[in-house]
Length: 600
Image (cartoon, rainbow, N blue to C red; front, side, top):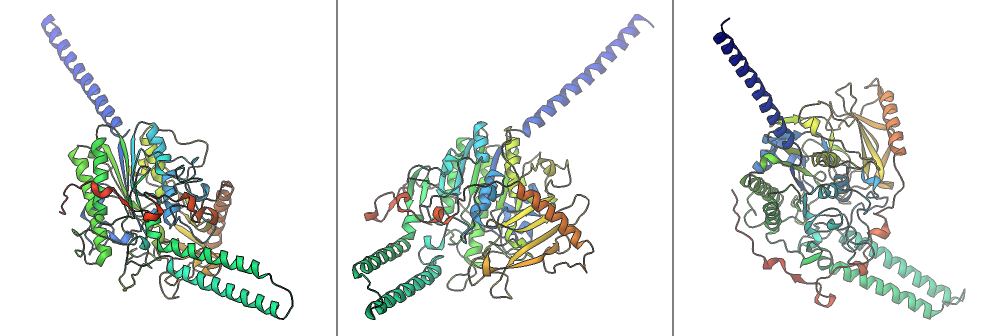
């Protein structure tokens, strides 16, 4: 070999080595980009209120127009068995924020009422609970909650804000601390009136019988009744009744108000362009923080009653005011997706859309118009653990990280969002408490094909109502019910006589042995299995009972945040932006003009 040939060979080898080295460096660069792309993303969590899984086009609806929400499904992952941790607002939202069953934080009621109804209640999400917003804030995220909170506000005074969103890791809050109720919108009826009337009648009857009885025994001389004491009792009773009547008459002013951070900016709440205002606040938050990772929770008031829609959407759907509200919410989702696109944030943002529980099928207006949504093929609705009450939309989009157009049929939970985004932000999961959610990323990216949820426990308030078991070696999804609500009328699909279903006493029927369904074959929960139709009937019940025992042992005694003492209205906790003599009226929000927005 001549020296020229040797030199050519060496040069060729060097080029080849250089090419290999270049490729190695290039691959490392690509890997580093991919690594960066799946860490510290911005997070946008869009939560509807009382939205049925059957209300969206991507879940089979063909009459409501939801192109923007459907776009999330087309560009991301659709979870077909996504489950709310509770079929009621307050406990479901507590579980969502903490990744824990609400029974662990005291946010599941032993009483009849399972949610907060008054702004001046003392219960709420305990300060020792760790929310994903707290952990992401510690990692440098800008954090905001816009819309509905429904997890309490004050503890001992009307300015301690111990349960307020700003005390749970959010930098910015614009919205309602309680919830949207019919009582908040004139002409929409009352969720309290029927119950209050019933109890008032009973109270007056008891009082009347007592007075007459005392008068009789006094007259016949059985014993002497001091009329001064009787008069004082009557006076106290009359004052109590007057306060009660005053409270419910002024409920809208006292409980339905809009806050920015710790300040009331509109009391009572105005529904005029409300969704546009919430959307504008969300857009402005993104614009302010587009150069830094952020967490935005946009918690819609739609489609909880009282229903409302702006002029741009009113009368435009095929399903009355409820359909108008769904389509207006879809428009808002589109606005959020557009601003992410405009700031080139789409590829660096995880977007999640869901509902806090299923549709409230018993919602019917005084004129007979259906104000509740559709739960598709699923039985029951809000306040029940039939699939219609807890199986909710679950859509996640993250271009380049999550494969578009994917469907996942395994059981997942809204509690899974906590560990998923906490890990993505580089934060550590709490080690001093039980976290019931599981990181969704391996499932979303196709690295695993089975959910980590072998068992899921479904509570009706604080009472274990049902258990779901998805064995690792089977396609079956077994579900047992220890008790079920008594639907009224009996042949209906809900508790229309009481407006919601309750969890104890004469409102339920206990089952021994428990009802057993295989949701993989009977998702509509039509036909309970028996030892004759399922050969492993008692084996399945035995495995589930063992899981229940293990789960029960993991529970600790905590303060009941939804006790009657924590639920009742306390005047000293009442917030008022002006004075009681001015009927707590103010409107600072209308002074801020909205940018013009158009429907597409």
